[in-house]
Length: 150
Picture 1 (cartoon, helix red, strand yellow):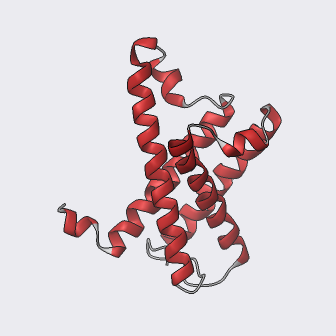
Picture 2 (cartoon, one colour):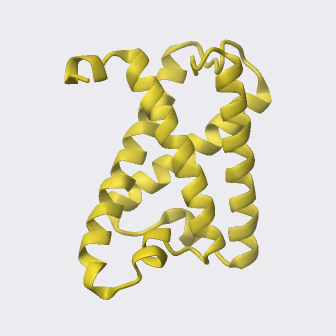
C-alpha cells in the first residue's frame, strides 16, 4: 500500500479503528496485570528494557493520534457513530477515544494521567472490563455497519 492509499480517509478510519480496537484489548490485559504493559511480561528481560520502552512510546503516540483522528471525524461528521446518534454507541466510542488520547499523552508526558487519577486493582479490573465491553460492542457495530465507523 502506498502512502497516498494509506492517507485516504476511508483507510485512515479503518486503520485507526482497528488500532484502537487492538489497543483496548491490550490495555485491558495490561490493567489486569496490575498496570504493567504486556510486553514486559512477554519479554521480561532487562536486556530489552530500552527497546520495549521505545516500542511502547511509539505505540502510545500512535494510539493518541488514531484517537484524535477518530474524535475529529466524529465531530466533523455530525457527531454520529455507525451512521446515527445512538447513546450506547457514542459512549463506547468515547471509552475508546478517551483511553487512546490518555495513552497518547503518556507518550508525550511519560506519565499516565488516568492511572494517577484512579488506581488500584479494583479500579483496574473495572476499567479492563469496560475496555473489553467497549471493544466487543464497537467491533460488532462496525461489522454490522459495513466495516465503517462514520
